[in-house]
Length: 213
Image (cartoon, rainbow, N blue to C red; front, side, top):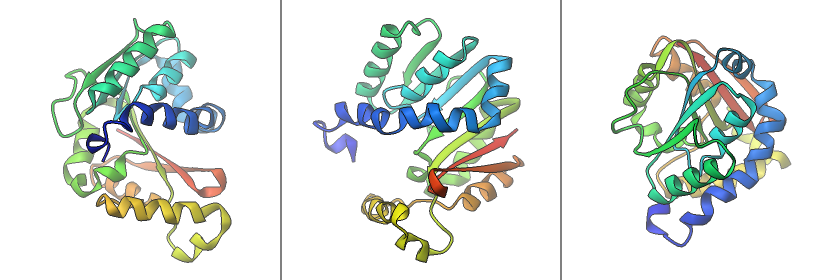
């Protein structure tokens, strides 16, 4: 969709950062134990579908020993991410490259591979996506997947905190996607021998699924 609307693309990454960056720092970073372990060990993080790089930039700012690689399919996002990292004094630790999970990934294995609100866009190719997530990780590394938490019982969509999600999912259907239940993601990780746990936030409407190689 973004590729078809060039006027939207330059604003999309900043919009996501404004919507989710603060929540990520306040709630998710301290609420997911894997981040503390990665911070202690240092190493390298890989963000697939990195947008304007906000996720990696916030990780790197909180984790001085961390290096990061962001991959995105849009040149505009790579340009924005690179410029922001330089502006924030992170350019020596972060690099941003064109590509996606279906193409050639950086050859080095990493300690953290992240997908932020992007997995549902490639769910139809999960048979290849999840093996690639595993292959990208060093032993003991983490895959951290952040997705809207689609409820097991659709009646829950009547609750005020979830009503917006129901309408958002309609737009996803127009694009050929749909929001995922956390247990679906856990099962997909089990298929590549990666045990996973689910962390719920925002009253259960946001899910962070963490799997360890």
